[in-house]
Image (tube, rainbow, N blue to C red; front, side, top):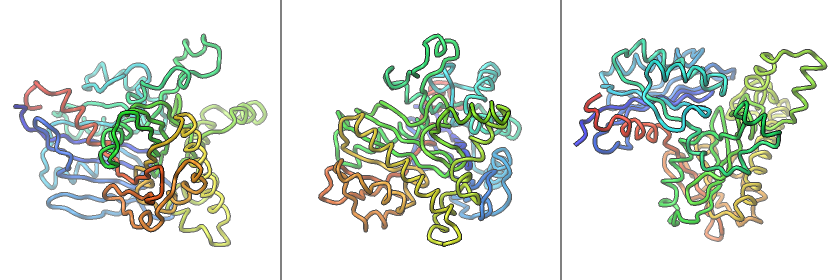
Length: 408
């Protein structure tokens, strides 16, 4: 029997930091004994940053500045210590492992050097995750740490979908290819959604929309395996996101560099931190803020940003229905996906030709805490709003890595 341990998992989003502690023995209990979620980390918005804590001896919201992820991690670790919650192992969701990492790994000095080499592959995510790893090393130096990778789930994407249409020598030299992201979330949905839907996983065609407060993507799945993902070599492409531009004509970047002498570093900042919802709306990168302004005459930019967000989301859903040759289930997950009925309703408009019929009342009642079937009884496609469990998937990876090592 595996010795019991408590696994702390950090999940760095581009503007959030999630944390959960799981109890693990022979299996990992999916119910966390402690959780925290830092919102609006390092972002510009009309509402203040805060951390929401939930545990056996705590249920509170602490409002205060969160200038970066390391500060947020420090505050969360202080609360964990304050409430005496034990920690034996620390895991991290690592967005982009490139071709250096295809599976979860224990972090030692050599692995840490390799992780540092991956920092530039996902400039919004990897550096902040590294900062949280460093904070854990400083605050809990005796605890073993490990990393699990978002890119691993998408290793099943076929070559015709992951290969870029440029000369092969370029792809080979620079390791250019579509990697895909949010894989830990998609791995959970692939395992859990079929049972909730009452559908056999074999030959099941699902389009899954991971819609976060920072990053968002869409995945085409068959038989629980990834066939395509809206993100590519980096998490910059695909949907319009909070501060990321998503798909744009690459000639725009060349034009800015050649005509206006924009430096690559400034261009990177523009496309990753100042574009997307923030770039169009102008006042906030948070979709929740933008929706609150839609309909007010003085906030025409908010309405435009929202229409652009939904249009691109609906377009990716439709393209993946075509790629799969049909769709049996449409799943919305992560913070925006499960909590925002308006986004789901607008995304499903125009999908009737694919067999999607939304139950508007069920959609509006879906609260986000549990999975909810929101399609009507006349819908050929089942539509589901389902919370993801990236942290639990990471904890399972940690339990697997340390199984047989004794208590960590």
